[in-house]
Length: 309
Image (cartoon, rainbow, N blue to C red):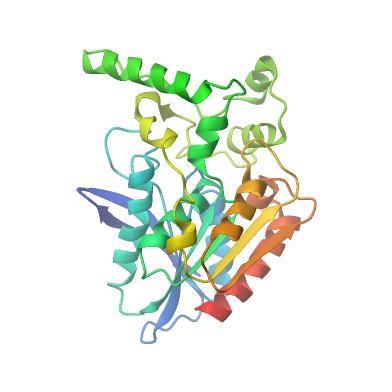
């Protein structure tokens, strides 16, 4: 396998990516290619790149794993921004790069998205018809997570009020409020008393040696979250999502709702060809890096893309 660091444009800034080609690759031939998208708060050096892209490349695919704009090694100001419209545009710009490569068959471009990257991938596929097949792994609808993240009936409205107060303060000269997606350590998680399986495993993955990476610093610009609260990753799937679809979920549900979200995406998609695969015994983060479970997901993706690309 050969890996090349590349960059492509989104608006005026560069998006950082890792382009992988398999052993024995012949640049004189046309090949299918798969864009691999990372979870919320993640980076290309974690599950999307070092697990899914690497294995799909070993299986013979050209892959492109990228850092979201405003995050990781990608450009874009302000930093630590989680903006759904920009995240979706990253996919379109990734395809823009692939169609300029002589060895990529523009009629055989697919996408795999993990967690929030899966939700964004679904949104991107609805409007970018150059994407010919869509695979999602524990796809999460980030807008719904933001709206339902607290148990009080008016939590989303209260959060929006707080965001607007902070945005007004920053417009008047205050320093940006940079918060975190999850507790910054297992000890901090225990102190706040969070025991949901997804949060426990998120902290274990992102904030310990299991998966921690300097390009995924667990930092989030609070005043930039207005758009996320109004976002629905699956909006219009029953109208616009027609590509072949492979949904993969674990059957252990948690706060991020990927089991629920996977079934919703499967049910709503207009696709004539669609399948949902439930990995028994797997929680959300098991499908990030635990071989017992990722192997099953990758075998399903391998056969899916072999048939559709």
